[in-house]
Length: 481
Image 1: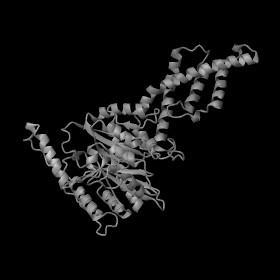
Image 2 (image 1 turned 60 degrees about the vertical axis):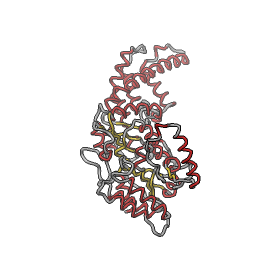
Image 3 (image 1 turned 180 degrees about the vertical axis):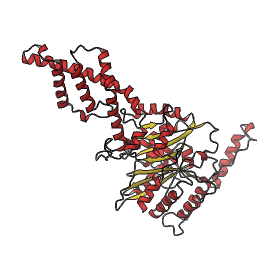
Image 4 (image 1 turned 120 degrees about the vertical axis):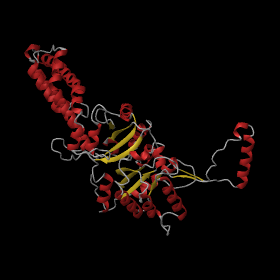
């Protein structure tokens, strides 16, 4: 993964708070952020340890006695929030998992600040904090409070059994910013370098930070959001995360991934046998279609030329049908999930060699599919590799028209996680999928080898160890030198 740093390129980051993750607001937040004119280039989970100085260093960059960006009052509020909510333990008694998203763009700082919004008491829903954050302080004066208390007291007199029940007094201030970000290039650089320095000591696979949210029996599954959702200003990645959030699972790892051809081949190796069995029907259908067209074409030629049909052999009619197809519907223009040019060539070659007449039986077409299923499966497999890597599957050379091929890999943890994710994936593809390739997401299959998948991608929970440097560390090093 490389970052081409233009003269006016900027990096910006957004930190999704523990409360937002706990309330499964992550997908909605990411969807809002991706409407901005920015490119998501790194993502990582953190859970600062109780003995780490991560929080203190984070707050050091917020403090600005000159108030160049943030008034002292809000600096105080932010620092208090960080120290109370991002540590272990925290005052809300929840997991202190945080997600750090790194964005790049020509005006990334302003674009992200605009998408995040400002801290304030007004109610609105036009930005992330307006929708997902809260800053509530008592607005009423003493006189109004007194009247409210009298009315409450009178109401409770109607319910005798409630009068002796004690409830916690409401806090005078409730502050939940939903996300944190930096207001200046200098603060952004300091914080990003801090995230890089603590990428492994306080970040990575944060399953231990769940702190008893589940009582044993936890599984971890990997979900990959595919490239088509990241190629333009598009809230789709957030929508997909929100789709999975309804399962009640916990995000415990995250990474932006650029697959090489070798990685893609190894990762999807298990798909070849599936393609052989699932897609061989395409070959049979194509063979039937070719014979129908060839028979029809033979009759038309015989009628036009005024000659007996039998004088035109099936082989000649099939060759003429091939010329006609390539003239009016070039195979190279066919998309994912459609039969490819080399497979079509193989179908025509097989029919020319084996067809004696046009009265072929269903068993004949089964034979065609059986003979060519490997050719067809390999063609679709190469299409998948090309799509996921953005490179020629045979040479490994990048394709000029591949577009951005970054994916987001997410680790979800919870009870019965693997099967729950697979069930949700089927629903997701029904709603958002287009075809066998553009189906938005991949998820670990418990029937295959989910552990190997994490090893191929170098995920932070990989038994072989995490790939280093991680995506965030790479971006920070490449950008700041």
